[in-house]
Length: 70
Image (tube, rainbow, N blue to C red; front, side, top):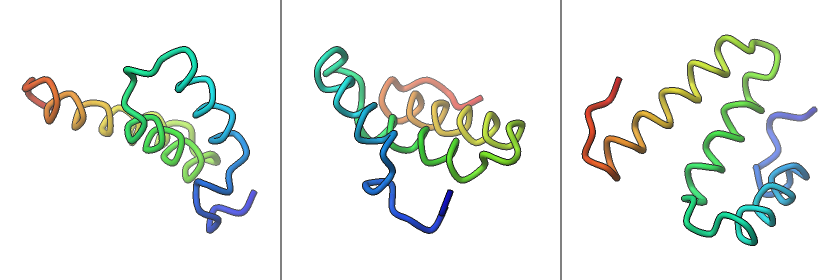
């Protein structure tokens, strides 16, 4: 997998975005894109992918729901 490729060129992104739009339109598209990006960029290190994903979600929750980041 070529990690230099933008997420728009990532086939999985297109599939997930289609499902998000159809079934979960209230789910923030930018958050989904960020999670997919973190998973993709750190696909060789699942612990790092999980950590980066948790950070992204925590940051989103703090910004959008006014809760403190973990």
